[in-house]
Structures are given as C-alpha cells and as structure tokens.
Length: 444
Image (cartoon, rainbow, N blue to C red; front, side, top):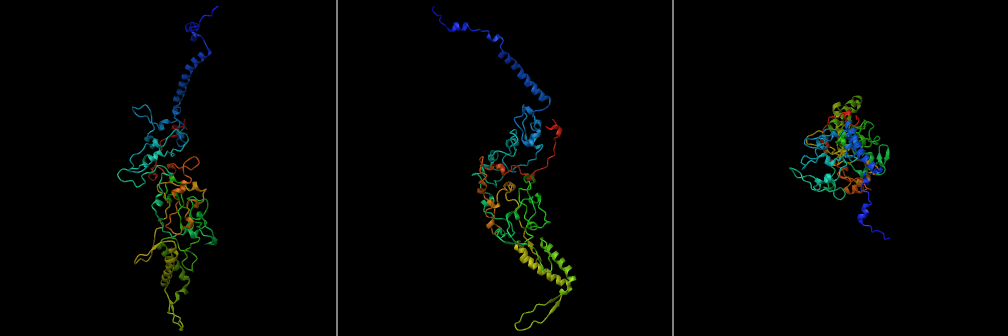
C-alpha cells in the first residue's frame, strides 16, 4: 500500500494548538516567579525605605574618608528644585571641607566631583587622574596676567620640565659658610677625637628617633610650625628639621672668647654677646684685683733692656680692654668662620647676616623624606660629598626621580597628585561640623 505523502498542512494537523493551555511544571514556575520576583523587589525596596537607608541606590562603595556616610546619601546628594535626580554639588562638599582655590587667576574652577570621583571603593579621593591637571597645564593660560609657571606639562616622565632651581641655574641663598667635603672627610677632628660624620648628623626629619650626636642635650627640636610647612602636608617625618647651632654644631664649634673662662659665648646677636662679655668680666675682676696691673707696651730696641713699666687700670678700663680683645677674636675669627658679618661705618658692633637656609626647596610640590628612607642620601644628593661652596645646590635633578617614578606597574607612582596638590592649603580655613552621629551611618 502506498504511503501518503506528508505535506506541511498534514503535519500542522498533528500539532495540538492548545498545548500552552495544558498544565506544565515549567510554565507554572514561570508564572510564580514572574509575580514573586517583582513583589520581593518591592518589599526589599520598601524595607530600605522604611529604614530610611538609601544604600540600595548607591553606585558603588564609598571611599574610606566618606564610608561613615554610606547610608546617608542626602549628606552629599542634595535635591534641587525642578530636578528629578539629586546630584552631589560643591555646596555639599563645602559643608565639611574648606578647600581654598588653586590660584586666584585661574581660568576656571572645576567642580569637586570632576576630580574627586566617589563610589569607586576604598580609595583616596586625592588620587586623581592626570587629565584633571593637564586639562589646564598642557596649555596653561591665566586671567589678568601672564602665567609665572611652565605653560606646557603633559606628564611627569618625559613631559615635565627640570626643577626650576636647577633649570635656572640658581644658587643656594644660604649665607652660612659650609664645606660638605671637609665635614665628610675621614678622621675629622671631633670633640673627643677623630670622627666620621654622615648626612644624618645634620640632616634629619622634624621628629628624629634619637638625639643629635654633636648637639646640646638641652636643644629642642623644631616644630612643624617653625619649618613653615602646612600641617596638613606634613607628618613630622616628611621634611628636614632646620639646622641650628645648638643641635648640630656646638660640640665641635665652641665660642670660647677668653682663657679665663671655660664657658662659651652665647650663639646670639652681637648685642647679646656684647652684654654677656661685659657681665662676665665685670664679675671676674673684683675677685682678681691683681690683674688691674698690666705691663705697658714698649718698643723693642735691640741690645737695650726693656724697663719695667706697669700701668694700673681702673676696673672699667680693664673690662673695656678685655671685652674689646674678646670681640676682636669673635668677630674676626670665631664667628666669621661660619657667619657673614657686616661692619657699618661708626657702628660699635657688627650685624650678623641672616642665615637664610631654605627649609623647603619645592614651594609648589610636596616631598616626603620618610618615604625614601630606604635609600642612601647620596643616591639622590650625588654632589654633596664633593661640595665645597655654600652656594652649591645639592638637589637631585628630575632624571634622578624618573629612575623610580616612571609609570607602569613595576615603578613608583608618577601621576601629578604624588607631588602636587590642587588646593592652596596655606589659605585653609577652619570648618565647624554640622553632622551628628545619630544622623550618620553609625546611628543607623
């Protein structure tokens, strides 16, 4: 018997067109889930809404600095009129931060959120992309007056000029006469015999771990305020402590002025030293009246005996004579070994030129010595061991920095924020807090 030819029409007649009406476990599960999932989602949102917790709407984890505000979105996102979304505005940031402007003549001021991107996890908000800086500094323009800074900087490695003091072949403005070569030589004469000095005998951070080897035990270290460094940029171990006579020099460079006294003259102004000398000799002569008899000077004529000629001075004359001799030693030799002295016409005392030792060379950048303590000082300050002149600038050049800060996974950070800050923190103003713990994430 011949088999009937199957056609599309005959095949279609075999299909149960009401198959979707018959019960099936998969279709039943789909129906349940299509209703249950939206209901669960609404209940979930309602639960957060009743608890006034907006964390569910967050775009990501908050930074460490703002983590306490995770459940308080309204702290930053302020609802504005005629706007559906509540964006984070500068007004919200100003509630807690009083970040001053970068420069008064900048062409525009970016909003806070354009540089400090939130909801990226527990990162530092100061870690900004280079584009936030190079959008201006790649082709720098200013309002009102020409810029005083390099107008084209695209990146640190290969797109940054040499540091200004080296680029302009500047000199150290300090007036203290210091020879690094002499102080670092072998078997240098010290207070108790030969010594071998190293960099840390003079150059140590504001909060050194131990006392100074050649300083006075009574010498106090300088505070951060004395260095002129904004507290928000310094941890106490970032910048070098100011070099002072009492901390670094007193053990080897005494200020002896007369063999009658073991005490040294004070390291102070000429007026203070003069008053000190007068007082010392005035207190000395009443107990030694025999010294008022002094030999008068005579010309030494060959083959003729010198007749004894004794002068008897008054106590004041003797004091004036000894003070003059001591000051001649101090002004012309002892003090002049390190200081520049000016002798004005008709002036009885000299003027000591201000030491003018720079405490911070990079005025527009930050540097942390503590972060580089694993290296020897001469790795960066290559010229120090052979320097003879005070005017020598011993800072490392940018090529030295680029050996480590060159970009890439196996190199040190080289983005702009590593050395530069946008806000001029010297003009920072105090902020009075407005938040309470009950209104923050802790309270919830």
